[in-house]
Image 1 (cartoon, rainbow, N blue to C red):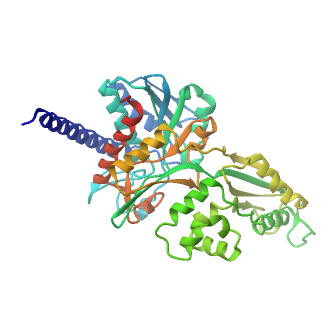
Image 2 (cartoon, one colour; image 1 turned 45 degrees about the vertical axis):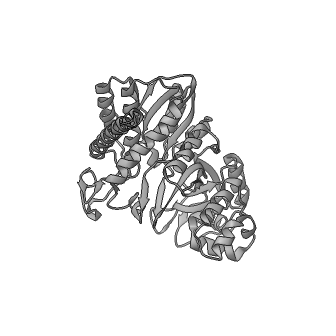
Image 3 (cartoon, rainbow, N blue to C red; image 1 turned 90 degrees about the vertical axis):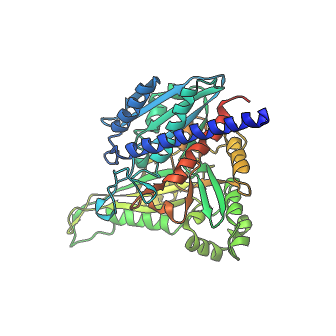
Length: 455
């Protein structure tokens, strides 16, 4: 046998062997991680810290951890490499609540049944976190020279806004991010439709601007209404905001999203999506778009949803104070402070004051970084005919904190969804397909190796 063919066979055998080992370890780690109760509220992410710290201790990996508040644990570790800017592998360890009454299995079981690994967080986002961890351990064990540092972070509190997680780390542990320029997080993945696979990567997101509206007026008896009250002022302010939607406009990132989404759509939406800058001038189409795809419609403008309000605690008492909260999301090229001024001017005659509860950070990540190009190259090489579509998220992730300090952050994992599988995210019976998860872990290793090793 030709020695070159023999060498290739030996290499291939070795590659298959370590890949299978990596994937099996990831599955076992994920099963165990899903059994760690980090449901938020209350969070108790210190349990995830204990879980991960034990692994790092066994591997001889240096790490550090901190609680931003009692029980709200965060942990990070760094593998040293060359002088290139560091790469961060980020995931959040908290998960949303799960009502056992509506599940077909224990939400914290981690069992494998019918080909799926079951448990709250399997998709959002302990599965991705363990994929990061398994590859982090693989890289550590290889002892190969890295061209850059690699930083692993498991942060608390993302599901409730990140104030006790990434937000706190950026503010109180800035040394974690020293020298970092690239970050991989949640937000995009693969999707199979019939015999085609497409991939999305989140490069920016609408900025959350959560506001509290407060009014104070003369209290009194419910039987004797006055011309104004704290509640009527709040109602007036909410009506003004609701009945004055913000003008639609299309930023370049959103224009690209609509063009990518137009593929496969039926008319007239296909043509409208391709020419979304013109289509937004048609009010009737914008109404159709909101009914057809509320998430797509939300990408074309700033939005405010009326979500919470409170007046009196007794039906026959006109209260001295009333409040409401609104969930606003603004396009990523906006300034939050300017937007708040706009809201204040809009409702200035109601006597209602505006106070920010939470503000995000503007920022978009480039499509020509080493990490982005490595992901793009991976898809072209391993999924011929597929493409990588940049996306703009209407929601938010912890990437807003890292973009806020200048780190190019990307929402992407290599897992490929099928059917309505993603509907279990924040829903009932969350689970991840074992075989496809195994492949996603191995696929991530290909991408990482393109970025962390010099050819």
